[in-house]
Image 1 (cartoon, helix red, strand yellow):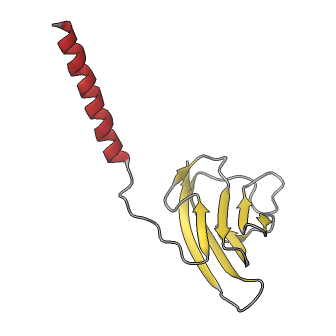
Image 2: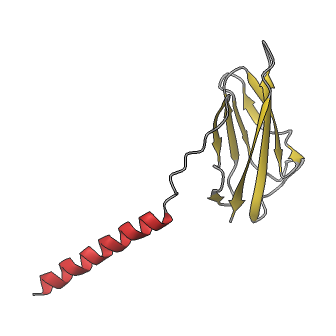
Image 3: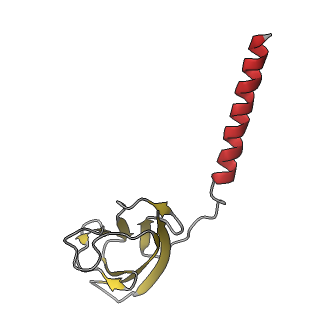
Length: 129
């Protein structure tokens, strides 16, 4: 008889875990990034910790200008061979020394650095908690 209670309890815990997963899961909408933007981090709408940095991956042959909350970012690292920009607030940053809790807006504007021009931009927001 006690094993039935154990199995029932385990079944209820499994059901609660599945329900919680469905409730907390994203709605399945895929974020479509414009070319030549290959990936961004954090994703639009993400809730991230204070230690989070941003990463922008462009196709090789493009360079970007990045603004965070309207501030131009001049100290991002850029690896030309991969097209990846990385930046995080730091005490030595000339613009933003630390994230503040709340919503932040990133704007990335790009163009080619060789060949024909192909300018574009993308804007998204995320939250720091």
